[in-house]
Picture 1 (spheres, rainbow, N blue to C red):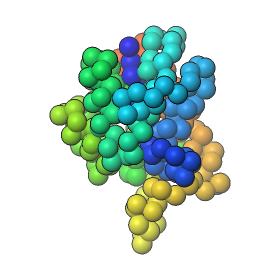
Picture 2: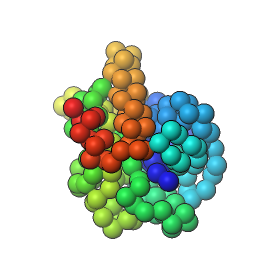
Picture 3: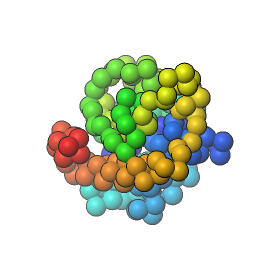
Amino acid sequence: MKWIVGLGNPGAKYEKTRHNIGFMALDELARRHGIAIKQSKCKALIGEGLLPGGKVALIKPMTFMNLSGEAVRAFMDYYKVPLEDMIVVYDDLDTEVGRNRLRYQGSSGGHNGIKSIIQHTGTQTFNRIRMGISRPEPGYAVVDYVLSTFPKKEAPLLQKSIEAACDALEYSLDHTFEQTMAKFNG
């Protein structure tokens, strides 16, 4: 079983913010395949389903971004799933809106959700899809920026990014992550 973790913050207040692009991608994948992400377990909301490439668990940590690793660890321990089968989907300041970058290892790059996952798993080696949110203008605090919503003019780029992330996730279910990176990092 593959397990896909979308990072974000719980609650309506954060729903459409840049920091929640990982949740947005999971919601679209769930919509495409009729999966309800409703089961509250392991400090997360979980939805399980069968996709053409196999069984999948969609996980939205409800711990707030900075503690995302707690939900990842709880899911790993409860279901005895290997880290190699996890893909984390999250926002990336260093990638422009509309673009995604796939990686299988690396530092947190200052992302607190990834920092927490590295802390709780003890490794920097896990599959990830970094969804671009671009950097804020100089003088705009990063914390305020990531908790702001996407402006209307970025809506087409946001939708393109979400669609591409879902396509990559679907492809990764019956291909290696290296093959998925080769196809979707373009």
